[in-house]
Length: 322
Image 1 (cartoon, rainbow, N blue to C red):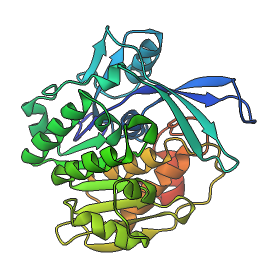
Image 2: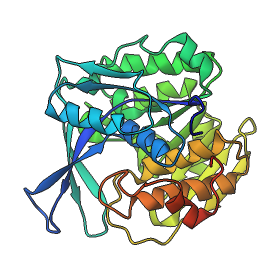
Image 3: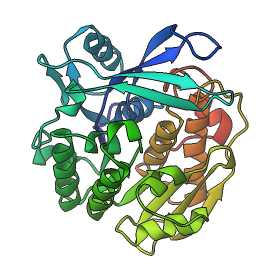
Image 4: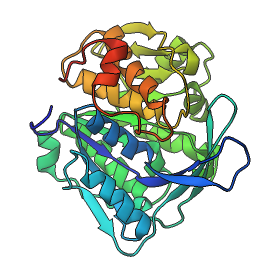
């Protein structure tokens, strides 16, 4: 997309991920990295050459200054990067197991990205973009929950494609029941859902077969459901109203995994970039999305390895937005 106006608005959290600096566990040696489920999607889109608008809320503390600096160095417009002088920055401490899979400990009571306000995104912006992406992280606490749901409803009414990643993080919610109720309620205004089977189990969807699990979600509203399946790749299920009806799969790519933080966010960025740039073949969308996700795992941090479209194209061939 380069110098053209963004077609995508990403909305949600930005935080500092503290990554283990050593190989052993447990550790008290951490290095701070740019992070956040929504921020990772926005930054991944920017890094692969399809920068979006990004609505987030940053503190003015030293961590917030760091995050603002990273965003300022990207191609993401600053229009909806809101500063909050009365809050601190959300911090997430990341741990890894032997396979590179991660766990999180969050420090986010009253932090800036929990204080997003309804009505921030204008009607004019929603008329200009074609896609709005949301995260379950900001659904977990008020007032960001109301702000996220309000944006979902307005974007849906404006004719935007609305996507959601539930991002099941038990530490952020009062209960699994609350998570399931809020996420399932949000699906009325969601067109595209990206999730893991674990996310959907937490949201109360019970099928064990991935294709049947994805199909069951479409009965709640979304026409298109992407499932990321770790080492088994990914699949997408489309209802009749989806751009691609039926089931498609992609086995993924064999890369040397260093850190899986942000892999799902990278996958989603690849899918959004492909779909907003005219790709209508489901397997091709999955191949691009898996490539972006795979590249993110090759270095520590969510977007560190994304240095442009070339590493992605090395896996999946020419990317459609260049």
